[in-house]
Length: 366
Image (cartoon, rainbow, N blue to C red; front, side, top):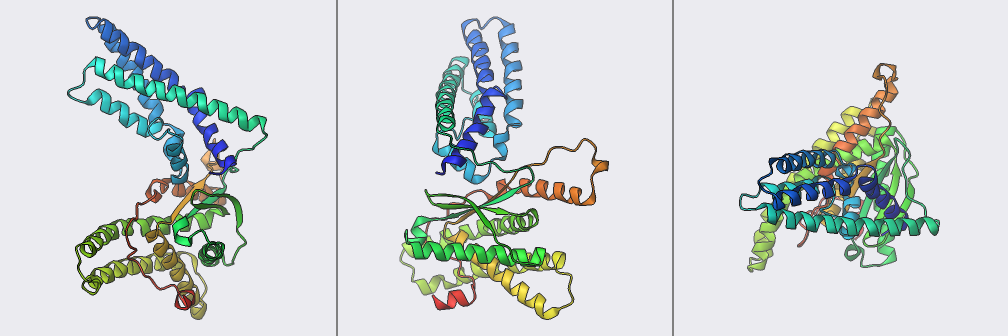
């Protein structure tokens, strides 16, 4: 876990307590619920509880944590805060009060547990953030309108070997350069912002246009892959029951053809939108390059790699009519990227891989 990134995430979580007053509102809910338990005949306690619950629910629905990237959510989970913020906490609280069999006393017990956990986590966050500040460890911030790609390389995939890790970083560079060349007309030098080491998680600065196209492609690949996961599970179950591998070939071919067709459609859409030259030969070269790039990406998602894209929003314009066309496009792309964050959530890809899409010359040499 990278220290600067952890610092940034903890600062965002502390805002939930200090600015959005989540813990204070939880305590208010607990107080009114305790009053209802102690004096069940007093209707005012029930009314106060409902009012405070509605306030808390509104805060949680609008929590910034709801737009955290998958990588950030993984960190929140690792520090014990998975169900203590935003929509996750909202669902937990709604379940407590909507359960048909629950009594006010049982609800109070559950709310007490949430308050205690939240209080404990807040104290830990405050101590760690204060420690980071005293040790002059900065926080990993994005400027407004900046994007970053998070790319997780499983340790088991590269077997902790430097040569294998180096190859996978080169593959990521290949993927990004082919996308960049199609949508911007040129290859780029991509800056590595940070590297975390639980899995090898690279954070790379990418431009808005590349990020927008990549997020669209990844969303479609992952949506298609969710169906393939069911096929993969069936294939693995058949293997476990002793069905010979040659008998499951048809299942694998169906899965690979499904993804191949989806990537073909993705590439076609991207080329139509971005390639304007009449040079057919160059168009074919770029189309082949971006197809191989997405094949590599799909194969790696099947092997447990994860992709996320985070963008720092721009301030809301006071008057949209004053925006230039370029600014309008920028706002549109940022909203587009942000809307796909949840669709790029981590996928559990346990079991033998099923995708074997063509990766060009690099695959043939292996």
